[in-house]
Image 1: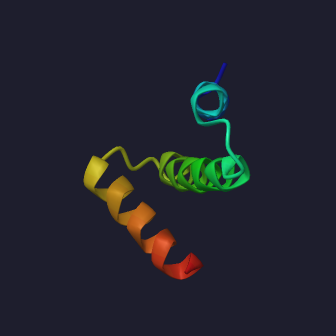
Image 2: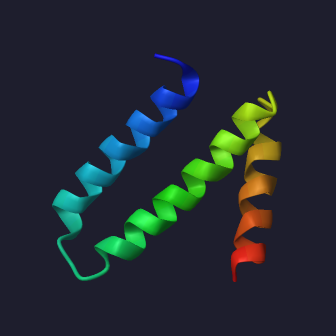
Image 3: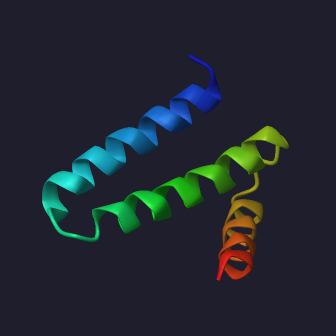
Length: 67
């Protein structure tokens, strides 16, 4: 399993676990948010940037562009 598959599996498990506990009408929004964060992390991983500050900055930048 490569790193992209690993990240994808982690987020799928995270969503499934959160879904068990949240059982509400907001589950689609939750999945959208998890996917948004996952895409940001995959984008950083794809550019071989391991620096956590860069990951945080990319997520914040993505948030601003989506709003």
